[in-house]
Structure formats: C-alpha cells, structure tokens
Length: 211
Image 1 (cartoon, rainbow, N blue to C red):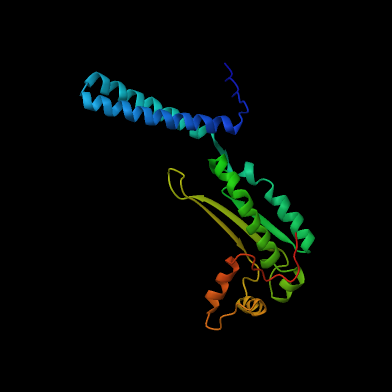
Image 2: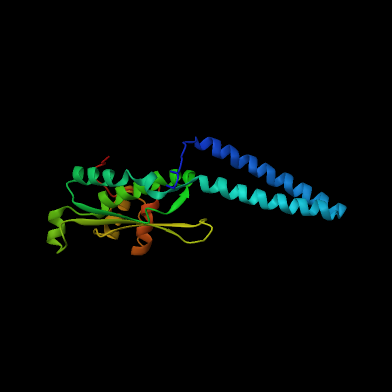
C-alpha cells in the first residue's frame, strides 16, 4: 500500500511557549514528588517517579523538536536584501549561505535576524568596493559575501555565525581621522586598538548615511 502523506498543521508559537512553561512547572512538581518518595523510602513510589521522569523527558524532547525550523526559513529574505542593497550602492556581489538546513529554535533565529542583517549591510556598505575600485586593486569586479552557520555542540546550545567579505577591510587610518574629528583621538592607540572603535556606540566612518 502507498505510504500515507505526512499531515502538518500551523501552530502559533505562543502556544508552544505556553507548553514549555507548563513543562517547566511539571519538572518542578516531579522534583518535589521525587524528594518526598526518597524521604519515605517507598520503592513503588520511587519506581513510579522514575517512569514519570522518562515520559516527561520524552515530552520535553517532542516540544523542543516542534519549535525547530531550518535556518533558511528565517533568512530566506537575505539574498534579496543583499541584491537590492548592492544595486543601490552600484556594487556587484555574489552572496552565499552555508548551513541553510541547520535546525534551531524559532525564537532564537528570530532574535538573530536583525543583527545578521546589520552585519550584511555593513559588509556591503563598508567592505565591498565598487567594480572600478576592485578592478584597479586587481580584484574580480564581483565581490563575495558569505554567511556560515555551524552548530558547535550536540545539544545545539552553541551556534557559530561567521560573516565574511573579500572587500577592502577596515582602514585604521580612516578610523584615526574620524576620532580626530570627534576629538576622542588617543595617539598611543595601536592599529588593532583603533579597529575596536567600530564597536563604539554611534561611531561610523561613513561620510554619507545610507539606508
């Protein structure tokens, strides 16, 4: 017989959040019952608690799995944003995403969307040069931007995101000039220390603010 097609339904993520909260309460209640069973030294009760713990663990795993979505579902808009931004800036870019099929908690991915997008815009705006500048530097006219997603632990608690471009890089002298204008320049700072200023609040080397 032909296998039955997998049935899927759409569930509001808030319901899954509520389920996770209820599971948390269940774990607390289970721990209280386990302590009482240990205090009473009742073998039958202890065995029942162990069995309940296994069921609870399976339930937690199923709820966690139901919250997982592949990276591409959240970041599928990135190629279009990169393409449109590059066109606005008069630049040409080859964009690549590695690790699209890695599955992570949806809420985690939603939190990462805007920061990653900001880094991509920086790579386009500050890193990748215009075709004529790249040609004069002996580079291919089309720049490269790559995003890598990698899970570093089996429990998926640590995700590494790496964004790389083959642009001009960060010019410490440009940062030094901007610091002099802002009157926050320290002549004793090394090039590596100067580069750290890109993380300062409201600091930018751009002469004209783009989108």
